[in-house]
Length: 156
Image 1 (cartoon, rainbow, N blue to C red):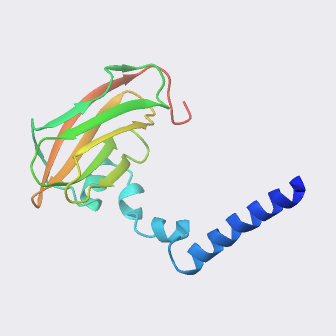
Image 2 (cartoon, helix red, strand yellow):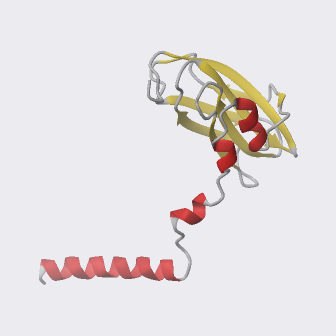
């Protein structure tokens, strides 16, 4: 059998399957997924406004939140952060960096039954407090850790 014909049929079959799934609504465009992001919270210029606009205002300190981040980050462009919430009923976890131009870094919604744990890398422009906010049982909780940055990650 001709190799060109085989490759053509394989590609045409894959394209047809992709179009069929898009046609019945199983695939969604990136705009649909991005439509739910909180633009006001992510574009706030200070920590208090960002937390308030993300609905984490009035969060109280909790030792039931474990925030793991390096004491010193050699490169602010890739700072590893892990968060575990030991608070029952955790529904969301958000990360903030106090001295970034836009403090809100991420907001994770956790479906029911999901382990309240995240691991990610964030950008930090300079030495700053990293704050995690957790929503559980209709209340907001927080934990904070200072991370020293030796090389800036947001244009530094």
